[in-house]
Image (cartoon, rainbow, N blue to C red):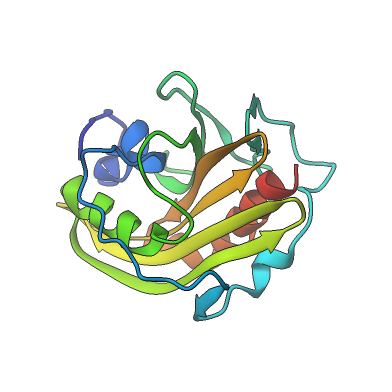
Length: 203
């Protein structure tokens, strides 16, 4: 990964690439396996959760970006990241990261059409291993936004992680929004991570 941040316990590598631009944005110099997607929506796997609306009113209001506002679920706290990005993390009772959210304005050449291939190539270029695309959707309409999303899995030096990463495009701008968790926490964190992503799209 491109950036290292020291945190307690064995999950330190989980923060590598999550606390910096590498998590959300894809650099224009990265390889972009361009997908030959048709103009219509393409889906592999289930992305029914993308029909969700704004984040619950009880959730804190995150800092706005040009493309939307990332509201953190309860229990998520702000995490310092690159200028222009917004990040949150959730820790367990042993101060280990069990959930992560990031929104970063689009900074590379990724598009709604090629997002699945681009994201996988980006993760591999960041140093992740055994990157596996689980499911993908392109050009899903969410209110006034369009989104292309991937669900993927990859291995760092210490462990394996699950991720949902979406490129969200609006008339006001575009951003990459990522929700991630270690496998043992994925089932518990997935609903709120997905709701935060759709909340960003609907904001």
